[in-house]
Image (cartoon, rainbow, N blue to C red; front, side, top):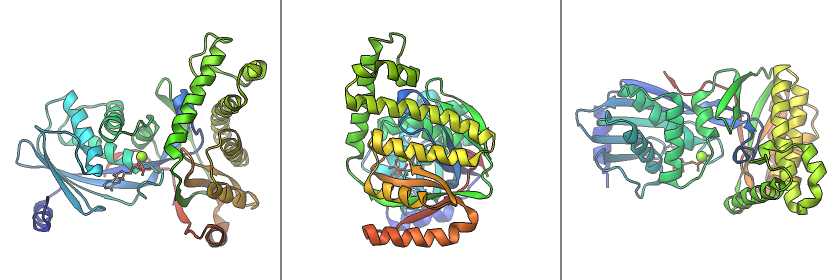
Length: 382
Ligand code: ADP
Ligand code: MG
């Protein structure tokens, strides 16, 4: 139990020597393609967690203060294991992972503060893990590569938090370069930068502020349905190892072999993967109308074929679809709640936001969250 007086004492004596900006991320397109070893198109955004660090005089005692939770967490490097305090587990997992690589860690102090919405699908969790890993790497000259920072962070979330996340969130948070999205190949874990100029449009996330509890069970069901599709198709196409290897032509030829529901799931994944590649081309050619259409198609697929949307997300998508100044929108993330991502003409934001907020409130008696986002660079020293 940390007393308020100890927190005051800690804050008074803290003199940072290193400051890190660790951003959240959005995914422009490519939903549920990651675990099918396909493509995603994420980017870091201009909302982040700021970390401040200093070494302390102790060989093994570490203090981390989250301003957002107003909690100080203290632990010893000789005894790093997960505990009761959930937010600290993300960080303990990172320290544990770094310990596996090197014995160069010593006692440190850290303060973090976020302007990322927490638990809304902008990956505050990856920002938290990667910011700590990146900062400790600098503070103690650990010589970890960016990929090692990403992998340690992902493993922390698997082993210390229990969320079996893919690699996209950490990868985008660390690797993004300003003005670009990352076309990430989830099989090879390599990326290509895709330059993006959205003028005169703005990306805006609309947060439903709902999170239906179907999300994690249906997520597992979808993973199993995709695996079942691959198992059946393998009998006809022995060279495939994931839906990434299947084409729309393959599905047209062999659709009779797949149960109806499995066919729909497979169609969505194969089409979505194809949409990511088409989006890359559209963005390279500055064809924002095409990008908008692909966003809309993605939403239709997620809602009708993959069946991971919900009434609130569909409402926001449909509402925006009727407006000529919104080029496209889709649900973002695993589904059953969270945000839609919308491409809105800047001149119409001031009219549209109050209008859709009012309509959403009338329909669901819920406040709509509004988060304008700009693409930004990955983790940096500031
Ligand atoms: P998301 O990554 O979409 O924001 P998650 O549920 O994966 O949502 O991660 C949110 C969790 O990450 C929080 O519940 C908290 O444990 C941790 N977290 C995020 N930001 C902070 C912060 N600023 N301070 C402490 N913990 C944080
Ligand atoms: Mg997360």
